[in-house]
Length: 462
Image 1: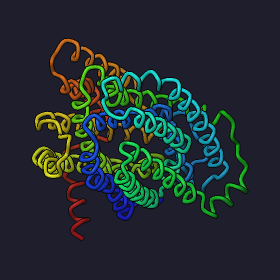
Image 2 (image 1 turned 180 degrees about the horizontal axis):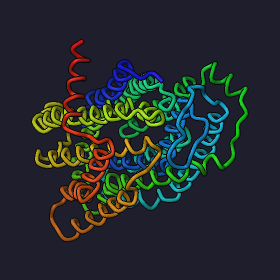
Image 3 (image 1 turned 90 degrees about the horizontal axis):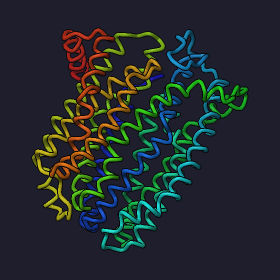
């Protein structure tokens, strides 16, 4: 499995495309849509995380185990791994994994669609009580959005199989192209006067393009021939093998949903749509900074799994330190720029919605940095096919909800409650405990950081 500078370049390019989408589409959206519509769109975006909940950690397990198979592993385990003795791919085992994916995500998509259709009349009717615009357009956009998410759940594993195989560059090229399609179609529909429906249609078209290209990239002629000639040993035992760790990851994802998205879904009952819009646009931009911050580490994530099964400790240590360095540098440069110049840029483009105050942005950036730092540590452990501290993750999610409710009920902090509830819940334990455990496991010292920094400098100097 070869992952290098080209893969890293395309990962950063794909992440930058998300920023370009913001630079091109967001100003026009902010100018053409009301603050109330932007608040509702923030609620739409929060619903996307539901797909992660239905995935319940299986995409992570599937991707990691595909990496194991392409690294030469002949047997999958519920926890831990079998050390690879050859690099030959077992296509029968691969075929079993792919069959398991199709069955699982087909069921997940059906479950999502049923729940979405059953719950929409109650939830959206409540949200739209304080909306003064065209409610019919919102309903149309909402149901199209639900259909798009159902399709994405059904095809959720397409990206996972590319990443697991180490096709990072090709996967990122597909992301770049589909993002360009999304920008072009969204702008076209916006200028055609379709309002918030434009954002949904742009997502629909780009999603279909992305999934179609991903499918044909993975299933090349050689792969199809080898899979056709192989016997699948699929049974529900394949899913049972992956289930224990997948379910643990699923509970971690549930915690992430509670502390980052569920709080936004609760917000309309305590805050105005304009306040939610300010928080939503601030969160979107910070999420872009997060994407750039973790891009380096995520590019080499399949390598991390490979290093684990091949027992290459020094390489694992190097990836971890470089990932933390890239994260910190990105937050310092881009986060500082956001605080200093963010609202000035929005005023320049005559946006109807501005960012939160600078002190609020600093808190959001600080807590996001801590969360991503412990997320990198979590992935070091996950690469060994072990899930650590999932119970603590669950508790942090429910603690976020409880803190938010108490702050809304007994304080006048308003939108600041959305920032503090998550940051405090994570900082009690996870934000310091996971990095500490990984540092101890890898036996990290100050000299290791100096070694990696010197190596990085010498590589780029050449």
